Structures are given as C-alpha cells and as structure tokens.
Image (tube, rainbow over all chains, first blue to last red; front, side):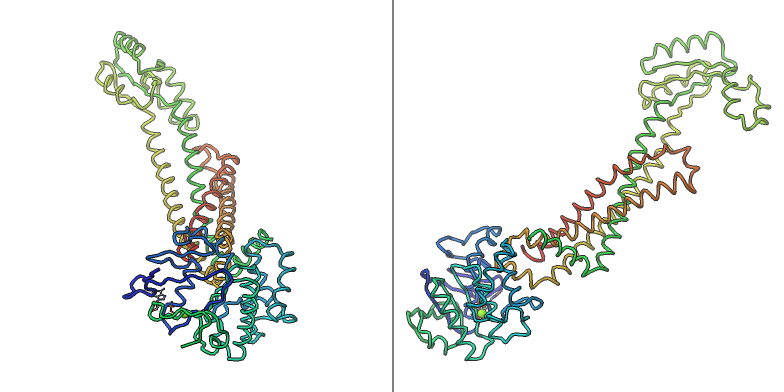
Amino acid sequence: MTKTYPKASRPSLDNVSVSIEKGEFVFFIGPSGSGKSTIIKMLLHEVAPNKGRVVVNGKDVTSMRSWKRPHFRRSIGCVFQDFRLLPNRTAYENVAFALEVIGKTKAVARRVVPEVLELVGLGGKEHRYPHELSGGEQQRVAVARAFVNRPLILLADEPTGNLDPDTSIEIMRLLDRINRTGTTVVMVTHDSNIVNQMRRRVVEIESGRIVRDQARGVYG
Amino acid sequence: MRIKYVLSEVLVGLWRNVTMTIAMIITMAVSLTMLGASGLMYKQVGDMKDLYYKNVEVSIFLKTDVTEQQRTDLDAKLKGDPLVKEVLYVNKDEAYKTFKEMYQDAPDLVNVVKPDLLPESFRLKLVNPEQYKNIYDQYQGTEGVDVIVDQSRLLDKIFNVLTAIQNIALAAAVVMAIAALLLVANTIQVAAYSKRREVAVMKLVGASNWFIQAPFVLEAVVAGLIGSLLGLIALIGAKQLLFSGSLKALEGLLSPIQWSDIFLMFPLMAGVGGLISAATAWVTLRFYLRV
Ligand SMILES: Nc1ncnc2c1ncn2[C@@H]1O[C@H](COP(=O)(O)OP(=O)(O)O)[C@@H](O)[C@H]1O
Ligand SMILES: [Mg+2]
C-alpha cells in the first residue's frame, strides 16, 4: 500500500507490502520519519491508504465506514510511547475505564481488572495514581488496559521509548508473555538492544520503503 | 452503569464550567421567552381577528336630503347584491339611541346632538369582509349616498401594529437563538477540550460514538430545557404583570391570554430549546472530536 499525507511532497509509505500471521511477533524498525507510526495508524483504521488494501483479522478495512471503527477497535489493543493514562484515575480505574466505556459492567471489571493487573506485575499497586508509579509501571498499566479486553492484536508504538534499558527489557518480557497467549504483537521501536535480544521477525523501513524483512533478525 | 456514567458526566460537565453554563441558560431562556411570546401573540391575534372581523360592518351613510325613492332603490340593490350577507337599515332615531348609549358618560355631548343631525345608514355584513373595495366602488357614486365607512380598515391598522410587535419578538428570538447557539458551540468545545484525554482513550479502545458524544449533547440539552423552563416562568410572570397588575388597562383591547395557552407554549419552547442545543452540540462534536 501507499500513503501520501495531504500537502506532503513524498509518500510516507511507498508501495509497502507486508503480511503478518496470526500469533506472530514483529518488529518494525527504521529511522525517525520513515513511516512506522503510519503503519500502526493504518492498522487502527486511523488513516486510509491512497493505494492498496489493509486487511486486519481477515477483514478488508480499507474502505470500512467510520461508524464501524469503534467495534473494530475492540479487537485491537494499543500502547504508545507516552502511556496515555488518565492522570486522575488509579491504575485499576484506568483499566476499568477501558472496559466500562465499551459497555462492560462494573462486575465484569471487578473480576478481570485485578487479574490483568496481576498479569502485568502490578499486583498490590492497583490503587496508585499514575504520578505515584514509575515510568515502567505506568507502561504496564497501559499494557494492561490494551490487553484487558483480550484483543487479537496488540500494537505497540515505541513502548520503551521513554524507559531506561532495564525497564525496557521488563516491558519486552511482558509483551513476549502476551504474545505467548496467542496474541499477535506488532511493535515499532528504535531500540537495537531489544531487537537483538528478542530475535524475532524484523521489518526495516527507510523513507517509506521496506528495505529488509527477516525472520529472527537483529537491528542494523 | 452506562446510563449512570453518562448522567454523572452531564452533571459534572455542567458544573465544571458553571459560568458558561449560566450564560448558555440565560441566553437560551431569553430567546425561548421571545419565541413563546411571539407564539402567544400569534394565537392571540388569530383569536382577536376571528372575534372582531366576524362583527365588522360596512356602513353606508345617506345624505340628509336623501329621497324616499333613492332609499328604496338602494335597499333593493343591496339586498340583491351577492357580496352582501346581511343588510340592516338604521333610521335617525335608532342612530340617536345608539349614540346616546355610546356616549352616556358625556351628557354634554348628548345634549347638543339632536336626532336630526345623525345620518340614517345601511349597515352591511359582507360575505367576505376583504371585498370591501368592490362595495365601495359600486356604491360610492350612487345617488343619496354620502360616505361609506369600513370598520375593517380600522381593524387592519390595529392588527398591523400587533403583527409588527409579533415579528419584532420573533426577530429578537432568532437573534438570541443565534447567540445561544454560539454559546452552546463554545461551551461544548471547552467541555470536549477539558475531557480530551478521556475522549482519546475512549476512541482508542473502541467506545461507540454515541457513548462518547452523549454526555456533551445531553449537557447542552439539559441547559436548553432549563432555559425553556425559565422562559415559561418568564411568560407566567409577564401575564401576571400585564393582565393582573400594572397594565390591567390593556385588558379591554386584548382578549385575555389563557393559562392553557401559556402552558401549551412550553412544549414548543422546550422542543426548540432541546433540539437546537442537541443539534449544535452534535455538529460541534463532529468537527471538534471527529467522532
Ligand atoms: N498527519 C500527518 N500529516 C502530514 N505528514 C505526516 C503526518 N503524519 C506523519 N507524517 C509524515 O509522514 C512521515 C512518516 O511519519 P511517521 O509514520 O510518524 O514516522 P515514524 O513513526 O517512522 O517516525 C514523516 O515524514 C512525517 O513527517
Ligand atoms: Mg513514530
């Protein structure tokens, strides 16, 4: 597929074709501005390609109407570099919020939120506010929120971009654990250390083109 | 839980921005009061027209020197006229009697006027009061006819004034409605901005559009409904003031406004207030949140 943003002089994604299997763990790497986030946005149905098709979970979403987007998003979890937590809600409330706004009852939240917080290693810190948690812990809350609805796909756009190396490795272990439950994980990163350690599929992008697609790859 | 969530969000939203909320409610109330008032006047003017025009007459006054022959000819001609529904002949004595009754408070005037001074006349009811002009053209030149007076001309002047007042009220309602609309749009933008993080998360995790929009839209609708309630109270107060208080003198001219008419205005005001707010909020959100 090809994506040229309005007013942009060159395409941000130029004839990119990539296929990810269910249950796979894929890194997208490349320099800043190469088009990695644009791929994530395509998968979220936030931007549409100018040319080509986007197929997610077996469904062609290229020309999906925007009113179908909410339901589509419920099958995808997403975490970002900046965590995007609600500052006036505790860890528990942040995760429960994501459930409640898609129509799950408080009772369901009471059952599954502690479970998923335990899974991400935040047992005992449910009632802390974001400012009372470290960066790594905040990102765990974000991962819990993305995963609580058991999505088929977890998208992560530079999830370790704001974290120190040790904390980054912990988050990676967490994503790896989630991947092992059968969830497809697509992760965008700059972090060569992580890529080299994980030895998973690596798709490298430069100026909107795929320059490498390697199973069990390393950075650079 | 979702209903409860939406409702509590509405209250929090209204309270968070309480100065804007008050401004929004006041403008809305003024606009809806104007709307209600012009609606009431529309009904009033309609009622009064029915009442007055049903009784209006065209009077053909005869010259003092009219001959018996001229009078009989005119009478026959009028009775045969398809435009005329009823003809009543009023002689000098009857005219004097009516005159005395009308001016019983002014005995001096009654004393100087003798029955002979008052002209005899034919009082006509027309099939259609609007066709006065035809009658005028037809009978103005007839021998023995002095002047032709149409009461409905006079009424037209009164009703023109009333209609003008009604239009002014309606125009004021529209202008205030535009102000209210801009305030609603602004309030919703501020509210959406202050909740931008929540909205971003909701969009990300797939909350439905109506669920994201509902608290904002309802916030505007609640303000609109409170505004229409205040408008109703204003109308009730205006009726008290106009017809029971200082302006009681007007009562003779205007037919009294019924309480039921005022309460019938409420659904109109509430409907317009609620709908305008909801539509404005919804459109604003579509542009602002792109949901
Ligand atoms: N909304 C946008 N409008 C215009 N250009 C954009 C927009 N988003 C991204 N771009 C451009 O597209 C290119 C790729 O951006 P992005 O996908 O964010 O890169 P990356 O995530 O790899 O750093 C960049 O040149 C960027 O300037
Ligand atoms: Mg990026």
